[in-house]
Amino acid sequence: MFVWNANALNADQVNAIEQPGSVFLTACPGSGKTHTLTYKIARELSLLTSDKQRVVAITYTHRAADEIQERIEQLGVDTGQLWIGTIHSFCLEWILRPYAVYHPELKHGFRVINAHDTERAHELLCTQHGGGLRTFDCGHYFTSTGYVISCPHWKQASVDALLQQYWADLRSSRQVDFEMILSYAYELVRDVPSISVLLGSIFAIVLVDEYQDTKEIQYAILGAILKASMGKARAFVVGDPNQAIYGSLGGYAITPAEFSALSGVSFTEMDLSVNYRSSDRIVSYFENFNQLTSKISAGGKYKNFASAISYDHSTHRDMLVAEVVRLIRHNIDTLGIPPSEVCIVGPQWLPLAAMTRQLVAALPDYSFSGPGMVPFARDIDNFWYKLARIILTEASPQLYIRRSRWAGEVIAALDLAGINTTAITRKSLLRVSNGISSTETDGLAYLLECFDALFSALGIDRTSSPMLVEHYEAFVEGSQRRIDRLVADGATAIADVSMFRKVFDEKTGITVSTIHGVKGAEFEAVIAFGLLEGMVPHFNEDDKVAAANRLLYVICSRAKKNLHLISEAGRRRGQHNVYHPTDILLACNFGYDQVP
Ligand SMILES: Nc1ncnc2c1ncn2[C@@H]1O[C@H](COP(=O)(O)OP(=O)(O)OP(=O)(O)O)[C@@H](O)[C@H]1O
Image (cartoon, rainbow, N blue to C red; front, side, top):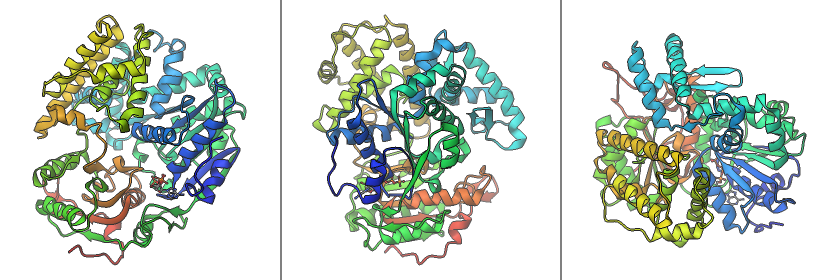
C-alpha cells in the first residue's frame, strides 16, 4: 500500500484520505485541496484489487490533470489504472466515442470542433442575423432539461434563433462543439441506462476537483454513473464555494445533500482550514471577501512574512504599464522574488494582450507567458495537436514522464485512426521525434515539416486515414486563423517557432493571466489591474456584489507574499464614460502599504 512521508499531510488531510466511504471536502484557498486529492488518488490506486478497475479524476483544466498525474508518478505510484482529465475529455472518451452508435446524431461519426471554430461560426451568424448581436452574446450552456442563454433578456430571442441555426449547421456537418459534448453525453447516459451501469462497475472511485465551478449537467452525468453503481463506486469531491467564478457559464457549488440526492452516495462532510500558501497578512486581507463564515488561519512557511498589500486607484490608464513595470521591478530586483513567482492578473483578454505586449517591450530582460498567446489551435482532441506537443518539447529528463504519456496518447489516437501501431512504442516514437530537426523559423511551417519527416520515418502515409486528413486540415486552418488574429492584435512575433515552443516550456518567466486562468495557481507576488465595476464584476452578472467578492477572493488568495491591486483611472467605457473602481474594493477598509 502507498505510504506517504509523515509530514506531507496534516491530520485533517489524512482523515479525509483515509475515510473509507465517500467524502465531500470543502476548504479554503491554499489549504491543500489539490494536494489532498493527489494523495487520495495515489492511495486509491495502490488499493485497487482488480486490473479492470479504474480510478477516475475530473479536473478543471488539462494543466491540472497533467500536474496531478506527474505528482502521483513522482510519489512512485503506477498510474496505469488512473483516468484523469477534464469533464469534456471524460465524456468524449468514456461516453461519446464508445457509445456514439446509440445516438441518432452521432452514430454516423462526428468531429469535435474547438473554441475558435465555435467563435468563428458565431461571428459569421451574428453578421448574418444583424440586430447588433456580438459573439459574446452567444454564450450559452446546456442543462439536463434544456439550455440557458447568458446574454441580457432583451437579446435572448435573437440569440435563440441564431443558436438554433448554429446547432442545425453543426448537426448537418456532423460536428460537435464543447457544450454539445456535455449534452450528448447526458442524453446517452439518460437514454441508455446500461452505459452508467457498466461505467459504475468499472470505476472504484470518482474524484472531482473544484466542484464549485461544475455545471448542473456535469453533476447530472456523474450522478447518474454513481447512482447506477449501487454504492460500489465512491466519490471524493473537493472545492471551495467562495471561489465559484464560473456562474455565468452555469458553474455552481452544489451542496452535499443535493449531490447525495442526485447520486445516491452518502457523503462524510469534511473541511480544511489551514492555509499553507500565504502570510497571515494576506489571509486576513482576502478574508474581507469571504462570503461564508469559515475561519481561515495561515500555517505555512510564509505565515509570518511581512507582506506588502497595496491598493492604487489613482494611477491613470496612460501610466498603468509604467506602474506595473515599477511593481515588477520592485518585487524582482529589490526584493529578489524570482520572475516565475510573479503574476500579472487582469479581468479580460484584450486589455491583458495589450498589457503583455507593452510589458514585453518595456522589460526586454524578462520573459513572459501571456494570455491567449498560443499560436496554434489548442484542440486537445486533434491528433496533430497531440503530436505537436512532443515535437515542440525538448528531450529533457524533467519532461520524460510527460512526453512519454503524450507519446502514449499519440499512439492511441493512431490506433483510433485505423493505423497499425504494433511496431510503435512510446520510446520509439520519442526517439524518432527527437531525431528530427529543421532550420525552418516559421512555427507552423516548422511543425508541418516535422509532421512529414516523422510520418515518413515511421513509414505511415498520413493521407491514408480520413480522420488524420480531417484533423490535419482543421489544425492547419485553425492555427493559421489564430496566428492571423494575434498578428492583427499586434503580437507580430507570434508566428515564430520560438513562440510555438514557449507554449510547453516549463514556467520560467512572469505569468500574465486572466482571473479565471489563475484559478488553482500560486505566486509570491500578484499584481492585479482592471479592478473596475463592469469588469470585476462583469456587467452581465446578476448578483454583482457576490460576483465581485468571489473574483477578488480568488485573485488575492493566489498571493504568497505580496499583493498589489490597481483600479486604474480613466479607462474608457463606451464613447462618453469611464470605468470606476470596483465598489466593494473601494469600500474595503484596510491599512494598505505604500510601495517605495
Ligand atoms: N500538509 C501540508 N504541509 C505543507 N504544505 C502543504 C500541505 N498541504 C498543502 N500544502 C501546500 O500548500 C499549497 C496550497 O496547496 P493546494 O494548491 O493543494 O491548495 P488548494 O486548497 O487546492 O488551493 P486553491 O483552492 O487556492 O487552489 C501548496 O504549495 C501545497 O504544496
